[in-house]
Length: 291
Ligand code: GUN
Image (cartoon, rainbow, N blue to C red):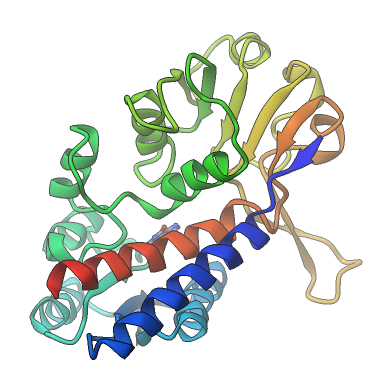
């Protein structure tokens, strides 16, 4: 069994990005600048956004964190987005999701300039992604492709089951893996809460992407020997034995599934760090396009 080490791979990627920034500087080219908007005080979102800002520092990017209160109106948020769209120093930006309930997420994502949409969430970029046109790939699926690539996990002709159909992970992941691309050419099944024969589907899968957000959902009896497991889940589960009062759990029961898997991502240290590295890669690309 081989651990798909997202921490190490993301550090390799960050080293490569830092090198590219150094070269840009030596050529008097612009330093990439990523901005992130966070609305409210959701604990997990605050952790993610802070990790993104810290990663910018590590690779030599400039970063801006726009921290807005929970009661920010939709109009105020749209104004902030417009400012970032117009700001010539900002190469790319993200609006951390989820947003408070009183804000229309679709309206917000549509307001982001597609050329600065380094999350790849704008409908124009989702459309380009689906049509195999060059664009910003959403960071989590992009990170999974990169991890599979760097560990030479064969996807061509393989049966993939993606559990979860979210706009951020499951849906784009299923599209990308079915495409004619280096890490692709797979036969993909998208499973979700209405799927009836999930265990049967999983038992036939060569690769399972678990992205449903239910801690330790996928268990050893649901997978075949030699399977590749990508665990996208990261849920805070109450744990009084931990100093901070919780532990981080994936969607996969690592203990039982790892006994059967050839390749498996850990949680934490798997998909999460890759997501951040790919966001940086997209920001570098956005900056290069604007040169
Ligand atoms: N919330 C969970 N994942 C993501 C992501 O990749 N980008 C943004 N903006 N919000 C998220």
